[in-house]
Amino acid sequence: MIGLDTNILVRYLAQDDPIQSAKANDIFERRLTAENPGFVSVIAMAETAWVLDRAYGLSGGAIAAAIERMLQIDVLIVEQEQAVFTAMIALKQGRGSFADAIILALGVRAGCSFTLTFDRKAARLSGFRLAQAGRPVPG
Image 1 (cartoon, rainbow, N blue to C red):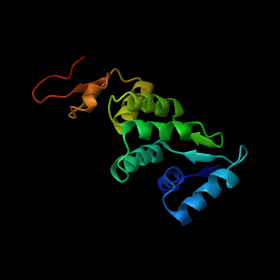
Image 2 (image 1 turned 180 degrees about the horizontal axis):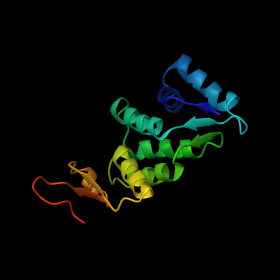
Image 3 (image 1 turned 90 degrees about the vertical axis):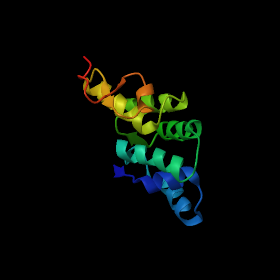
């Protein structure tokens, strides 16, 4: 198995640098195999979503499509694939950022009944609860 950093994923998805994109294409199309797959960590996936948003200005729907594409590549093993899929669906439906959705999905997988946050945007996702100063943690 070969670990893949965010910059490899972004160059493969964006195809915006003639040299690095060509190298990323070679990695995905020739070097990675079923016997020697690529590994994508949850952190690399979250960072990829962040870069596509901040550096490339892609919409949530376009980022969700890119993540979905990564999930469909046979020669990739995506860490916590089900949580990544759940976060991608939330992003596709416009229910928050990928990072917020992955935090929530991983918390649910770990058995959390909810996730506290100060982030009002994240709190729009079912499963987050706003933490407010001076109030007891809701049960």
